[in-house]
Each structure stands twice: as structure tokens, then as C-alpha cells.
Image (cartoon, rainbow, N blue to C red):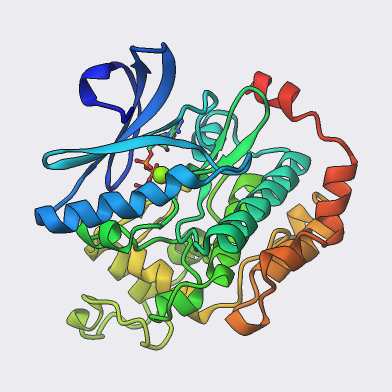
Length: 336
Ligand code: ATP
Ligand code: MG
């Protein structure tokens, strides 16, 4: 029968996100350990029921690349979603613990995420919409699975937090207001892979800190108000105005980085600057196989129409080599 709140016993908190929190629970009738996601929503009862109906699509997802879902229910004012517990957590947590992920494991992440995207898209006509390290989970079997896919447009609209849906993993076309597409998931995957391989978020302004401390404030007499609300279509910011911006706007501290950028500044960079690369500086030269660079470049083509869909990316040499090389995922997972 359906899962009821009374049948669950809380064991530990697994993490918190923008939309709510995730708790490790025991399903008392069977002893099964599950992860319960609690999402605080701001919606009328009819909308809530619609959200629940949409979330129930996930119960029919049956793939080894997707975290399974056991059931969901409303616990006013929250929606609770019970899903498969992944005992090694998400890749953002793993990165925080161990730093950079070995490149062959990153290759496995790429292969598994592509398979997951392909399954969601081909079988259920779902676009994930939120590919990032915290939504890619690992268990001690060495399995890598996707969670938190955007089945529910209503849910996304109703989460009681305005920053939900705005993400630094967003593709240039999404930032500029285009509809989601499977290619926007591919972009987010590319950013994610760079982050995992380096152990930190790919900043667009790697040298920003040196640059900022070294250069005088060239445009000190510029109107400060001009930059209070960064405009996505405004011309590029000078280092000096970036510094002012950073002082003024609420900086988003991105994982592993020492630099604070406002989220809007970062979104501007994504639209304007050339895409980030796996091997982006001389010190990284030769660190990663060429085929990995080639794959990540293909994910991060700025024009959506030129970016390849998951089925084609699965045929890239890096993916085939990674799968052929038999990466010992179980052994690696046990070690993290
Ligand atoms: P955001 O809210 O920005 O999407 P997030 O993905 O980290 O961030 P949540 O989806 O609420 O936020 O998840 C919080 C954390 O809970 C995750 O980072 C992950 O470590 C953990 N988590 C989520 N689902 C599971 C699961 N099924 N098994 C184990 N841990 C999980
Ligand atoms: Mg999540």
C-alpha cells in the first residue's frame, strides 16, 4: 500500500538544499532504509494534488541509472518524497570530502548520467532540468544514479524559495530564457564533469583575485547604482566594477572556491564568455586524456542547436574507452 508518515522512523539528516531537506528513514513495516525528501511548498490544495500526480510519474521510472521512488504524500505544508537511499551520498559531498575525482571515475559519471538522461527522455519524455553534482548519487555497489528530475513544473513553481531553478549549471540559452531541452541537460553535465575532475566549480574568472588586487580601480568614478541589478545583456564588467559588484551584492560562495561571485555575475559570464574547458590552463596540460577534453568540449558548445544529444555523446571515444577499461567502481565507492 502507499507509504504513510506513521510508518517512517527518522534516522539522520542527509542534507539540505534550497527547496527542503532530505532525511534517512526506516520504513518500519519492512525495515527498508529510504531517503525522505521534504519539500516546503506554497500552493493551493488543488495545485498540491497536481504536483503529487506529477511526482507519481517517477514511481514508474525503472532504470539502474535513476534513483527509484517508493512513494510520496502530502504532509501539510510539505510534500514528502520517499526514494532509494544511496549510502555514499551525492558527488558534491564526495568532492568536499576527497577533492578532485579520478578522471576514469568522472568518465563513469558521464556515461551513467547520459544513460539516465536517455532513459528519462526516450521512455518518459522527461527532461531532467537540474543536472549538478548534488543530484548525482553513489552507493557502495559503485552504482551512479540521477535524482531530482523536473517532472513537476508545478512543483518547481511552488517551492517556497525564489532561487530554486536558478543555477550556475544552467546553459546559456536557459539563462536567456529559452525552454528546457535535453541539450541544456548536456551543458549542465559538462560543467559538472569539470567540477568533479578539478574538485571545484569551474570559475570563469580563474585569475580574478590576482587581477583584482594587482589592478587599480580604473573606473572609480562610474555610477555605482549602474550595477546594483546586474543586467544579463549589459556589456562585460571591468575588474573594478566586478570588485564593487562583489562587495555590494550578496556573494554566493561556491564550493571549493575562494572567490565570491554573485550568482548574477556568474550567469552573465556564462552567456558572454567562451565556455569553460576541462584543460583550461597550462598547469593542467596533459593531466586529462585528450578524448576527455574532446567530450567535455562537445557538452559545452554554447549554441544549443550545435550541442549533441545524449545518444550521440554516448558514442564518443572517451565514453567507450571508459566503459571498456572496466573502472572498478565498487572498489572506488567503498574507499570514499
Ligand atoms: P538544491 O536544493 O540546490 O537542488 P541539493 O540537491 O543539495 O541542492 P536536496 O536535493 O534537498 O538539495 O538534497 C540535499 C542532500 O541530500 C544532497 O546533497 C544529497 O547529499 C542528499 N541526498 C539527496 N537524496 C539522497 C538519496 N536518495 N540518498 C542519499 N542522500 C541523498
Ligand atoms: Mg537535489
